Amino acid sequence: MEYLLWAYFVLYPVYIYFTWETDKRLVLSSPEKRITVYGSTIVMLWLPVLVLMFVVFESGADMGLVLDDIGLVFKWDWINLLGSLVVFLLAAYFYKSLQQLKKNDQEQMALKAQMAYIRWFLPTNPSEYRWFIFGVSISAGICEEILFRGYLMHALGDYLPTYGAVIISSILFGLPHIYQGPVHVIRTALLGLIMALIYLATESLLVPILLHIVVDMYGGALAYMVFGENLKPKT
Image (cartoon, rainbow, N blue to C red; front, side, top):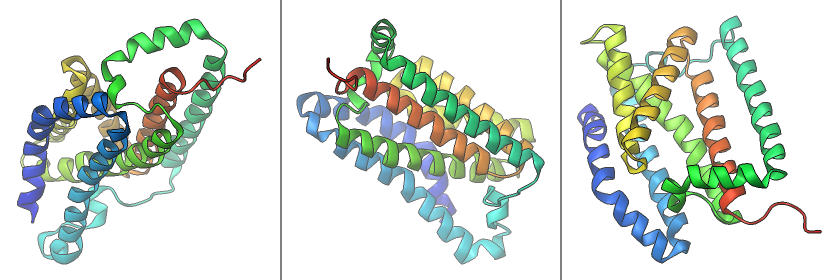
């Protein structure tokens, strides 16, 4: 079963590379299909996690692979408590910045231009917004951290020093984001590097998962504010 996981890390970026333009054309021609794309994204995130859980629970003991090995342990020591507090404060800051953005038409226009490259994928109505926030964002935060930080870093650690596992896992994390363009693949890989360092510091996926979810939710909220319905009260 582990071969399926390795195939996922290798083939999923290839799949994204050859299919994202088709998805884009589908959404641009039929905007109501955006939720369908969200649904397929969620499925592609959770399927390898389910395979991984099968490996852990069915054959993990014999292979020396347990939940602790992939970061699924919650350590309530000072560094995890501090990290959780920082994520909470960051979420509060994001919320405040969203409230300020509502009143700033000029900044909204600037954000609209910055996010134009991925506009086709971003939520534009309340239903899409809920799917993006509670479906895509939460699924990505949980699944990508388990797969790329928890499992992949552990697996690569059998063959590479820690810094090598961090670099390779971060690159593989960035590649499936090719639909955003090469620059954003690099940006996502750097974000993966930061998440990996947090994981190494905390020895738990708790903080990386929470941080990942908060960042993705913030991005979705920003997009909905500039591309979706006007959230400012009418006068």
